[in-house]
Length: 230
Image 1: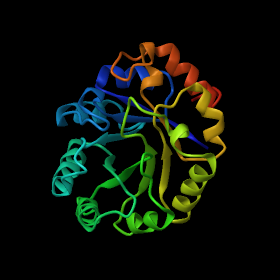
Image 2: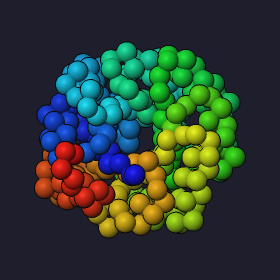
Image 3: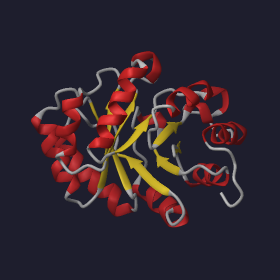
Image 4: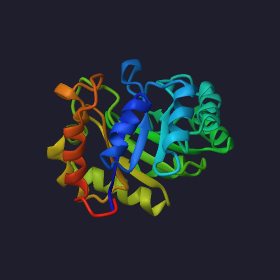
């Protein structure tokens, strides 16, 4: 069953999306980049309040050009309480420095998810190289938030191949990248573990805007109809 991931900036937003029935709460500051990080205190606050009921992840910032920074940032996010830590990377033919940084990060120990950018997505063989580092998941997202969406960048066949190969490798799979309500049905056909949203949850569809509860509820219902007890 495909889950819904909502990216939020703080505890207030996290509680709003939690009340709307999302499955996965992702901590990210959109004003600081594609994968802008929030501070450790925010991670700890959200994890204490909601970590027992929701999957909590956190991004470590746009640091893929300095792989040496990755292990320490992952360790800090994990120590603050994030169950999953998301690391961005241009993952086509991943450089040895990125692979080594991921190996070290996974020794934190942390459940690391690599965010692969759809502007230059990994080849299927690259997914095996990433999996060998010890990560628990991969996802596709967009690095350029003012550019094309995931489905504009990658055809359905490529998205399906990504999800299928990652699952064969035992990895969690996620799809995100300027997704809107119209993307839910086509992407659910690929059966990823989760679909991720930020802009589509906000007023005026601006990822730096405030969470719009009505939009969160509508997207949640389109992914999985409400069931008593959920």
